[in-house]
Image (cartoon, rainbow, N blue to C red; front, side, top):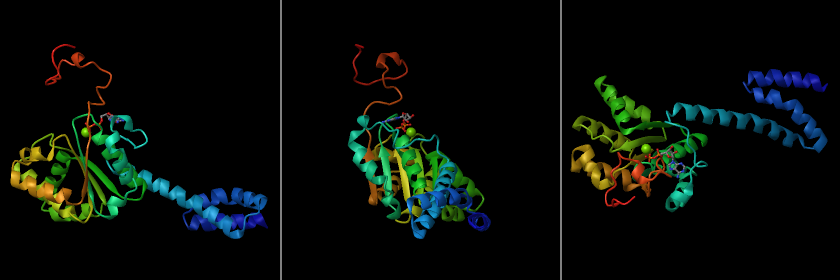
Length: 261
Ligand SMILES: Nc1ncnc2c1ncn2[C@@H]1O[C@H](COP(=O)(O)OP(=O)(O)O)[C@@H](O)[C@H]1O
Ligand SMILES: [Mg+2]
């Protein structure tokens, strides 16, 4: 009898820890009978439900474990303001850069969407099955110097190497001490040609020497980062301040904007 078989399916599905098979097997069996599916069609439809539910919950877990500052996606990015990078970002969304261990660098003034796009690419990578970690440059340095103090820098870098993508947000907001610059350099070197980084910065590369306190260190690091990288430059005014008149922002000094409002 069909109901005996379904009971057995439920038992076997629970042994496989595949609850969606139990949920959908009866309903899909009816659909299959009505629509004249083959046995193979039915089996594929049932397994497909289980697999897509697992992938969705895997993606959700990876997104939650990534430490994103906010959930931002490519779907809610307004390309009218950043049309010049649309094509590049959309090709990155395929995730091919991850398997090639290429990097992405997002440069541009504050509020132009660097963190948004870095987050959206991280979400995309998580959806596609990659583990991701997101933190600001200073948070990365804190994490590495904690590991260093415990004598565990090398295992920490090996652990991080198992993540196909690390996002380093806000390089350049705070200058680094020499020790911090050295740790940051080790992070970049450990991933060179092995796994991807997405970096964002409000400074052009020419300003990185000031951040790392040393032009030579900065040059060596930039060299490794950009050897295999897409460098995207965002332009324009801050999205945070859109629709506001410049003269309504007394704390913002706009050079060369004149005094007439
Ligand atoms: N083109 C855009 N479309 C939609 N939202 C945007 C866009 N650019 C920026 N934002 C939003 O504006 C805010 C600031 O952007 P953010 O990515 O943090 O800028 P940045 O990191 O370059 O300083 C965020 O809430 C972000 O989601
Ligand atoms: Mg930002």
